[in-house]
Image (cartoon, rainbow, N blue to C red; front, side, top):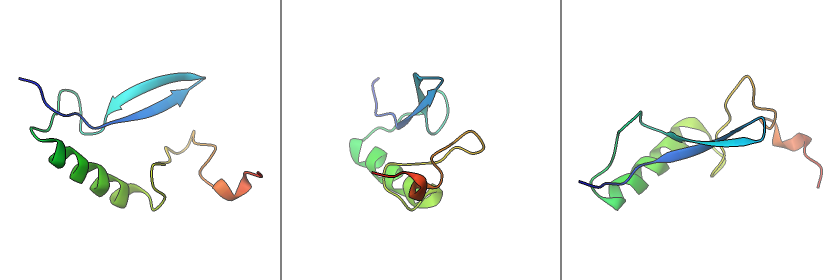
Length: 68
């Protein structure tokens, strides 16, 4: 049986890793459930869309330090 998996990408020492947000092997039966879980995870963890800090190694926690 296939399902939907919610993953986030962690880049450590320049190497990207995909991590299942709900633990190894956890899947959602429906795409909609996965999207709802993504929105809830974002609301629970961080107020900036698509960015979830991982302290203490996260150097971008304060995005105001980035000058464009």
